[in-house]
Image (cartoon, rainbow, N blue to C red; front, side, top):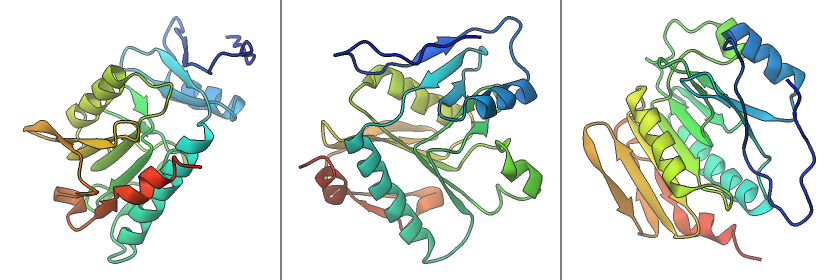
Length: 205
């Protein structure tokens, strides 16, 4: 499976796809990820391999701010685990997805071995954050958020730094949009408050 690493001048990097036939097993997929460790891969439930471009400067800075705030909240109780955008999760619909930030409750981690955490864990985070980048399509990001919820996530935030709002997803609750200076966690992240003003500042020179 060859892939191009060259992007024509003037064009932004875009997501590329591979459609292996037959579909890759989990072991084969992980071998692909390790062989091309400078590329971030995801796998759809249909077995299509997505190759995601590296984050731009604003997105990387914004995501670092989000992870820092989530980790700071975690340090108030030190229960469960926080994961960043480099972590992939095998989900029950056969997909492997990577959120920009995630939190997993201690009870969700019960029975997970050190070996499983060394690779891509077979579990769905209880809380996920996706940060919209300039090259992302909102509709596609919204579909991914729905997939997270369908696979077991209890709460998900789709953060749009360009519209300066957050789409809040919760199981069995209609999606709502928060345009306040902060957004407050519910369920697994009750007590976590993300200061959006600090996130938006990461998009300024």
